[in-house]
Amino acid sequence: MQCMADAMSNENSIAVEVAYALPHKQALLKIKVPAGTTALQAAQQSGIASKFDGLDLEDATLGIFGQVVAAAQVLRDGDRVEIYRPLLADPKDVRKARAERAKERRQHDKAD
Image 1: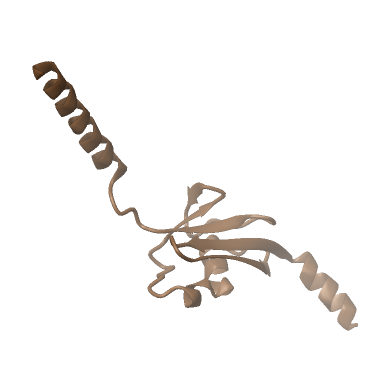
Image 2 (image 1 turned 90 degrees about the horizontal axis):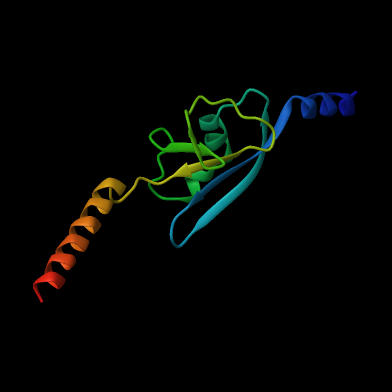
């Protein structure tokens, strides 16, 4: 009887991965969760937050295979939930500053 219950529970579960990385430390955890589990629920169930000081899953941006998703996104078997760190600098501001420096160099080169 127990084996049949185990088989039933395996049919209703999916295998997913939860990933988070810092420059000096990373974790990729493989877990089984019930079908219908959301990205946030999987991250919480993985226990990954306990491995990283200050990791707040409630406010984190989540993704699946490089695509940002809502925390309520229902997972499929084989999905990898990625927890993204906040950006240190806005990419638009970085590009704008780079363009300004290039413009200044061109003007300086013309003056010489």
